[in-house]
Length: 237
Image 1 (tube, one colour):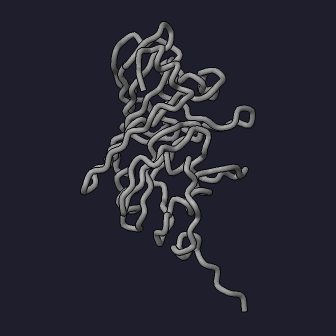
Image 2: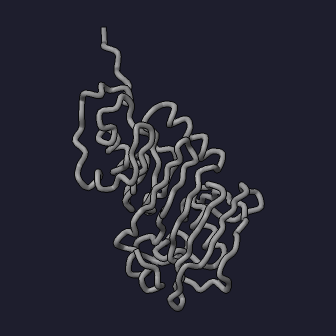
Image 3: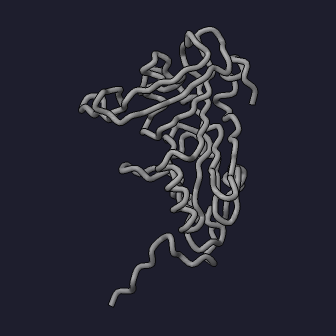
């Protein structure tokens, strides 16, 4: 009779997987319930259908002796760096999922765009719809049939035709910031999908505030590939 297979997130906590130094250095906050990680650009949060490295590969190491694997409460695009929250217990995972589902988690992003906005701050309210074609694959587009989406923005630095923005998404749609900025005519530097040219995506999940009890906060450092463009706009690390 075959033995019953043990579920991955219930593996014995005494089976420890070493946490590599580079991953340990990316832990921005950690307590008994919540972990906030500085996710590196280029690392997917979840495994895709084509395979490849993802944060899921590192969850056993991030467990650090706890009973359950930590679980991401939200997603960041593969090429977006910065703050990612994970729950370390079942109640914490449920609480975090509720915060993000209800839009209560406060998220702040930094981006460098390939344009010069005519104002210093504003709001983009444009519904987003996923569209897929055989020729171009899928992307998010502004469409009246899409889901309501709201992004607040303000200029934090300028350098000719490049601008550093602070972004506050009030909804959490897929590719929301990238699609909204492209819709405004200001694609993010390095965002080839939405017209920002080739190179690395200049988008950072800069800060995260979780209104739990007690409140948790974290701020991610500027990744190396964004430092020069931000510095040229007058924004330090």
